[in-house]
Length: 155
Image 1 (tube, helix red, strand yellow):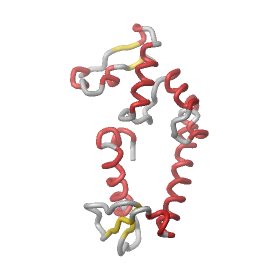
Image 2: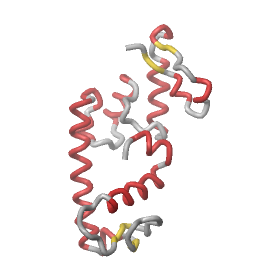
Image 3: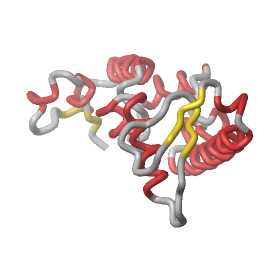
């Protein structure tokens, strides 16, 4: 799920949208789906949410492992694109080194602006930059609910 979609919808809604997309994108026939936690409304197949599913269902546990490995691979690719954040090492979890990189370099396009630590780091980073290195984006008045959207460094 792209970071801007997560920011727009929230993590919870984005998770369900991603599950719906994943099942809809499967090439073979799907009789039903099991999910870890609660069921997913609007899915194109019958589905059952299982509380603590990764602990009680082998197929949910296996899917959880596949998802984690896939996410780690995606973070390693992001690390190639944005080496200053060291995504390949911390895999997107908040670590001291990641927080320091956010403050030193500011957030990149892949950071989720709905996360408090990203906004705080952006404000910290912005405060450390000379005012002459920023311009106001066109339409900034409409970004009142996202103050960071008005801060764009001249590159």
